[in-house]
Structures are given as structure tokens and as C-alpha cells.
Amino acid sequence: MKIGIVCYPTFGGSGVVATELGKALADRDHQVHFVTYNQPARLDFFSENLFYHEVAVSKYPLFEYPPYELALASRLVDVVRFEKLDILHVHYAIPHASAAFMAKQILLTYGIYIPVVTTLHGTDITLVGKDRTYSPVVTFSINKSDGVTAVSENLKMETYEFFDIENEIRVIPNFVDLSRFSLKPKDHFKRAIAPAGEKILIHTSNFRKVKRTPDVIKIFAKVLEKIPSKLLMVGDGEQRSECEQMARDLGVNDNVRFLGKQDAIEEILSVSDLFLMPSQSESFGLAALEAMACKVPVVTSNAGGLPELNVDGVTGYLKDVGDIDGMAESAIHILSNDERLRTFKENALARAKEFDLSIILPRYENYYNEVIERSKAII
Ligand code: GMT
Image 1 (cartoon, rainbow, N blue to C red):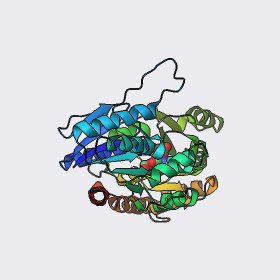
Image 2: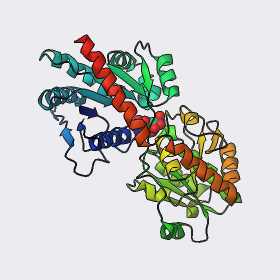
Image 3: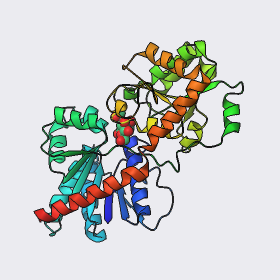
Image 4: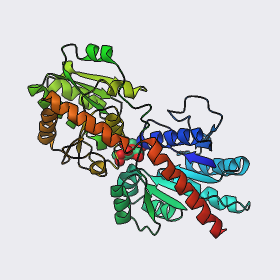
């Protein structure tokens, strides 16, 4: 198959899923064309089946807001026509699904019908889409897609609840490549971070408000009262300086390391004992899945799709959003007994295996085939 992928080429979860999916499809001999404004963060190597088409947005002085959506639609028309794509897979409703719709209409004037699959990742629905400014466009572009997937049952439900959707939404969860995300022997790194054998807690995110990163510091401060431990904060974003200040105010800053954006996240996860994700909203929680694949149990909020991943009392614990005491108690419970910690680690890995790339990838391939077949009937 010749597949076009549109995504945000950043470190965000939707971009990671889109890029990893494209790489895996290329390994299975599909030809994959990424169409974005920047080289996707994890697309940093050569493969004969992978192509990158940059969307250049002109900076004409009249445009206070450069029209990215139009530039993307034009580029999609160009790539679909000249690369003879079979299907377009757009990640994130805004503005990708609407740009794809416009491209599709233009392509019809060339006698080409390009089926479009839209994948909903979460914030496009739970935050951006619910903003009335975007609601008509989100509803329209979901209904006009030839196929729609969501990364959890919860996100599917929320989409039906908040938008007037006529299309069927197929749930295809996030996945992890266990050949990359697995426990790595990094004992020297562990000794450097925790020289006295302290337990290591970790949080990775883009430090957006929705992640409630200050809660991570508050939870850690409570854990530290009971268990000698260190906290690794990986990533960067708007709440980072607030977290740094809070770590100082709570007197725990000597035990907290802010590592910024990191590529080899699996190596850092490999030295960690517990992952914290107190998010306000989380459609799936890819970062938690990546931690579990590296044998790290997770204490998370019960928001969104997290209960579909984290099994309460088995792979970690689920607590209400903002329940800092509850999350700290759960963390202490897991970390205070080595035998218990070992069991939680084994359980986390066993659960992560259910979301291995080799299991989820065929679900996308089958869905593409289904959508292409259905579209043939329309033409
Ligand atoms: O979580 C983020 O801030 C990034 C965000 C995105 O839109 O790129 O991630 C969303 O998509 C991921 C991949 O499907 C999901 O695993 C995340 O749970 C979801 N984030 C939220 O819903 C907040």
C-alpha cells in the first residue's frame, strides 16, 4: 500500500504514534509518505520505504496568521497525485482532518478519490474540539472521513457525547515497540542517580497544564517523607518552572532532577521504579505504556482512557484527579516492599505486552484495507 501520514512532528503522543506507525508500516513493505511542516522527531534514519514531504508556509506580510491548513491541503493534493497514494491517514482532527477533506475535494476534480482515515488522539477532542470555535469543523471533518479511529473506548464515548457524529468510530489503542522499550542494563546510570540505593520515581510529559505536573512534585514530597527516593522529571513545557520552584519550596529539590527533553527515554525508564501520571485528562496515556514496557509500574489518575491501560492494584494504582494523598499512599505501598515491587513490575510488563506493536499494527492495516474497499464501492 502507498500511505500518506499527516501528524504533528513534535514530541507529543500523537506525533509519536503516527511516526512509529509509519516506520512499522515501512518495515512491512508499505510505502509511507509523511506530510508535515518538519521532519517528525523520531524519523531520524534512512529507509527506502519512507518519504518526507515538507509543508512550506509562506510568510507573506499580509498574513497575520499563516494559512497552514491551506498549505497542507495543497501539499496533500500534490503528494497524492504524484506519488499515487492509496490512502491518507491523518492524526489529530484539527487542522489535519479538515485539510484532508479540502484536498480530497480538489483531488476529485482530477478524477481521484482518496480515502481518508482520521485518528482522534485526545486533546483534539477533549480540549480543542470542545472549544465552540472549532466544534463545527471537528464535527464536519470527522463525519466526512472515510474511516475514524480513536485511541480508547473513553475517547470514542466522549467524541459521541460532545459532537454530532454519524460515522462509526473504531477503537485502535496506542502501542509500544517492545523491541525498543524494554528493560536495559543501565546499572551505572542508576548508581549515579541513586548512589545510596534510593528508589527512583519518574514522570515524562510535555508539562502542559493537562498533565498536572505540580501534583507530581507534591506526591513525591510525601513519598520522600517515608522512602529514600529520587524523582526524574523528563520533558519540557509551560509548567516546568512552576515545578522547579515548587520542588524548592517543598525542600525536595536536592532529590529532583529535571532532565529536559530526552530521546533515549527507554534508558531512563530502565533505571526507574515507579511512574507518576496524575493527568487531568488522558485519552490513552502512551507515556505510561512506555514505562510499563520497561517494567515500571504506574500510579495514575483515573481520567479518560487510563483505566483501559492501568489495572488498579495490578499494574499500579488509579486515583481520582487531584488525589495527591491517595497517589502518594499508593506509591509508598508499592515501593515499601521489594517483593511487592517486583510483582508490580512483572505485571506492568505483562500488561504492556498486550499493546505490542506486532498486535496493534495489523489492526491498522486491516482497517486501511476495509476503508479502501468501502471507498471503491462509492466510486
Ligand atoms: O499528551 C499530550 O500532551 C500529547 C497528546 C497529543 O495530542 O499529541 O497526546 C494524546 O495522544 C496520545 C497518543 O494517542 C495519548 O496517548 C495521550 O493520552 C493523549 N494526551 C491526552 O489526552 C492529554
